[in-house]
Image 1 (spheres, rainbow, N blue to C red):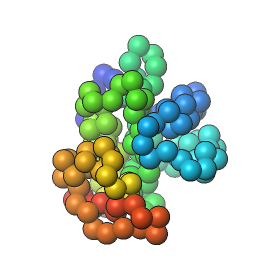
Image 2: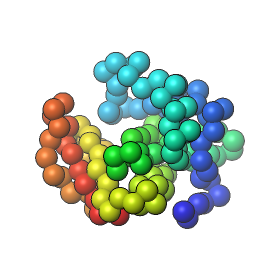
Image 3: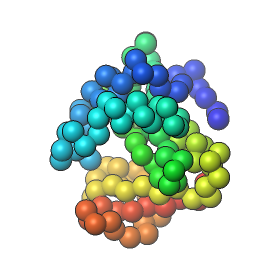
Image 4: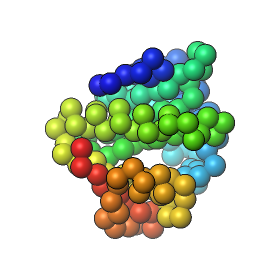
Length: 142
């Protein structure tokens, strides 16, 4: 993995900040805030690599690829720090996790017509359909 001075693997102490960022995002908001819990984050830290971006000792974003199914489980940036390349850097690390787990392609889903939709298209992700929630399903070669 190509780590920058601002990236590292998440630790349990990061979980409250990860939850804060997850609930602060402007798009892709959880319809049920309890559908992603601190326990989910802890389990992910235990079984995979949950990457974080840290500036001045504060986590500003996170991303994770799920080695169980080849999907991007999370990519969330504190709204105050968007547009600076943090997401691109973290997404590359999450894709690296999937590549290391033996996947040749990664998948993810997001709401249509959002900045995330545009971000993934701009960064080489290809729309392959819709899921049951009506979200766009994207795929990318690793």
